[in-house]
Image 1 (cartoon, one colour):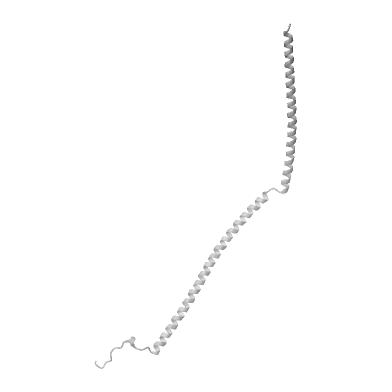
Image 2 (cartoon, one colour):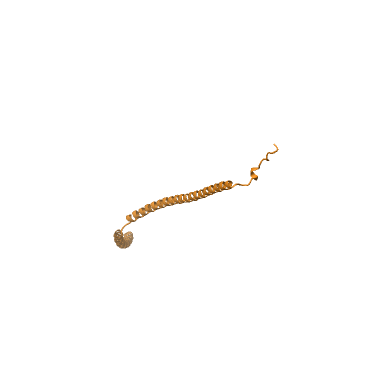
Length: 147
């Protein structure tokens, strides 16, 4: 067994043209896969951002719809309140009635002052009559008792 060549170390052997071609093919396949994976990742990222944007848009649209509904309800309430308010004709009628009441109150006050004046006059007359009656009674009593 002396004539047998020593065992070869395959890592030490130079690469053949077929090996290089095979390696080139695999590198090309790996590069294509890398480009495809990158493209898929970019597309997924864009779709995810669009989905987030769509989700945010949906939330914003829902919030706007809710706010519009609330504002619409409030506007209807204000319109109802305005409709229930008195008209200028009602206010005018009320003002004229108030003037009439003030006039009547003024007349009643004047009459009350006249009645008070008449009562004061009557009271003073009654007092005068009472005093004169007392004076007459006192004079009569003194004339009867004197002999």
